[in-house]
Every structure is written in C-alpha cells, then in structure tokens.
Image (tube, rainbow, N blue to C red; front, top):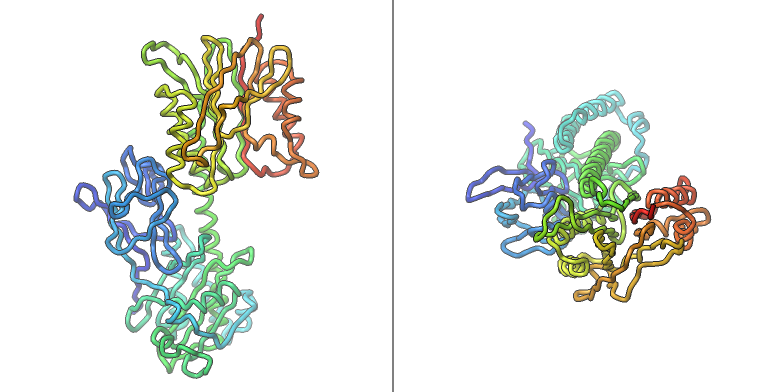
Length: 553
C-alpha cells in the first residue's frame, strides 16, 4: 500500500479569532494580497494587491517577504522592511491588516553537511536521450511502458505537484525496489523545494537530500547510482549515510536549454534489494517527460504572472488626456519587457475652496525606476498611488517629492533609485511649476522656434538616494504655441546602428524643426526613433509626454 507524505507547509488564515481557512504552500512562492488571483487572497481595502510573499528555500525553511505594501507586514509583532525576508517557523504569526496568518511547518527536511554531504556515487550516466535509454534497457518494452505511464500521469490540468505525485507513484510501481521517492525543482532563487514525495513501504520518514548528490546531479547533470554504501571504502560517513539510505538512483530534470530544472530520486534501506544499472537507465529515461512538465508549468506560471502584472500596470496609466481649453496633450509609453519601471500620469488638482466643473490645475508626472522588468514595475506600482494621493490632496510638486522620497528611502530597497519629474500646469495664468528628482530636464520649444531645457538649481537627487534631500520647484511661463517635451532616458539612450544612442541633440533637433503642436512633435519623435532602432529590441523602458498651448489665431 503506497502512502504519501505532505511536503508543503500550511498557512492558517485567522480573522477576529476564527480560522477562516487553511492554505497549503505549493511550489516555491505563495503570494498574499487583495488581487483575486494570488495564492492567499485577502478581501480588505487596506491590503495591497500584491502585499507579501512566502518563499520556500533549498534547505526546507520558509521565509516571508513584504512587497512594499502600503500598510506593512508584521512577523510576530515586528514590522518587515520591504524586500527584506524574514524566516518563519512553526507557529510564526504573520499579521496583514486585521488578518493573522499562522505558519505551520512541513515534515520534509534537507540533510546537513554532516549527514549525507560527503556521500559519493558508484555509477553515472551521461547520455540522457530517452530513445537511447529505452533501447539500452534490459527490458525495452517495460521501459517504454513506464515512459508512457509517466507521460499519462503528467497530463491534465491539475496542479503540478499533484501531477508529479502521480508520476512518482507510477515510477515506484515500475521499480518496486524503491521504498521512498521524491521530486525536487531547482528554482531561480537557488532554492530546491520538494514538489512530490511518496513512501512505498516501511516507515514514512521525511526525505533527506544529500548535498553531494544534489551538486552532482544538478550542476553536472548526471544520473547517479548508489548500489550499497557498505561495499565501498570511499564512503567517509557510512554510518550517517546508511541511517538515511542504503541504495539509491537519481536523475536530473533537464530543460530544453540544457539547464537542470530539478531532480528525481528513488531510494531504499534494504541491504538485499539493491538498485541496478538498468534501474538507473529507466529512471533517466522517465526523467525526460517529468522535466518537460516542470518546464511547461514554469513557463505558464511566468506568462500568467507577467500578464497579470501588465494588466495591473496598464490600470495605473491615465485613461484619458486632460481636457483644458487652449491646451493639447500627447504621450508615448513602451516597456522593454512585458512590464517596466517607467510611468507617466495626468493628475487633476481640485481646489477644495473653489470647486468647479473641471480641475483648476493639472500635474503631469513622469517617473523612471533604475532597471526594468518586474522588479522595477513593482516599485513603480507602489509609488504611483502615493504620488496621486499627495497631488490630489493639494501638495505642491516639491513637497510631493519630499514625502515620497522619505517613505521610499525608509524601505531600504538597494540599487533601485527612482527619477521623477513633476510639472504642475496652471492654465489660468499659463504657468508651470516644475520639481525634479534626478530626472532629465524637460525641453520646451518656444514661440520663436528655439529649443531650451526647463532646468533650475532647485532640482534634487533621485528618490531613494538621500535621506534628507532638498527639492525646490522652479516656475516657467508658457506662451501661445509653445510645447513642452518631458521624457525618460530610455528615449535618448535607445540604441541604433553601431550601438549609437538616439541622443539628446537629435531629440532637440526634431523638436526644433517640427512645426505644429504636441501631436506633430510627438509623432515626429516616434518616427525618428523607429527609424533609429529599426527592429532592435529595447534595452530600457521609454516614455515621453508632449503638451503645450494652442497658437494664437
């Protein structure tokens, strides 16, 4: 009778003293937040969409990470700093708003350096092609039947851990010498979590991963055979090793790009029933479809996560351009990957003492997080709501940057500074108030056709680099027919032939020679950019906003 052992930890979700549900931690990461598609959705307006994450590490331990949430994550009463993980153990209490998540340990563990770390192997196999392995098997028909059974077990739309568990059960039926087996996956963060564990007979002791075997299988991508630890003088820790296993076979799960995605191991403690070379051949053949299932699942999860993140980021962009009599707006936004760290915004500023049918002023905001991709997108998604809130509350640009910098600096996110330009437009007097945190100075095409930069000594450093910077707004008048072009450095740094950047001089030249308002200028910049980069991939996100006054009739 084959039994199974749960390898995932659990989170007990408690609210107002009552346990609402218990969630099993499957895979390497479990996200917690208000978004309905995360692993632990918490329905509360003060919970961030992506609030925190539980991570499973190589050594079987777990940790929790706050994802720069608005209302923080607390572990046993201590507030977490964003992106600084804290280890969790049995009974650890994670508080998010008025939810309490109680962590419960799994049973499985990984052997320490004095347990199985110095074990060696008696055999290895370097050719992992499934067709060759089946042909070399002592019973090719049985080997082929095993491959087909595992492939069928891996099919369907069930969770990957469930499918791996079924495949592992099939493996153990084909190889009855196995008393115990597991599948572990190598994750990008260096962890090696157990994804499936089965016990065929004997005590249901948790699996022990030998660090020596892990290194040999994953790093060298070799299938390995241990016949008997007692018949070879090379075993330095025979007593420690034999307490865990007596005989074993293990094989890497190799992806389409040749990288190891994980490993599968079968072992036993009986001195009379040892694994043989044909068992190694068969396991290596069966590891091929298992690796395919792991790789496909990883790709699907990555694509789903990127699609969800891209949807969230699109929702942060303004839905419409400002409607200001005598003014026009135009913008372009493009990420280097599915998501990015650039963001532009049009934020209305209402006058609480003089409410009117339309906003009295507007704030044009342009930001750029150092780097690109998902990390930059997460940071920008955290900053954007705070900027909007402060602007709508009537804070002037310099004070907004000061407040945002204070909060962002306190998070302590390393090597992720943010540049930001804020341009407050007062159409009643046609005046701009500009504050900048290390962002490129906007360009302006004056009524006479000249082009200059709207820069001033009050511009401060990028957000997150100085605990107490000084930001001062500078004021500029905007005459009829004048156009402002604000941009991120992804525009001027875009690479063309010979790795030459698009450049600020080219940008100024286009703005100077293009007649008309914001839209013709924006389209001219975009056409020149397309001609410059051609079909090359972008190395950085890029955004630019053009706005200005209508010319006199």
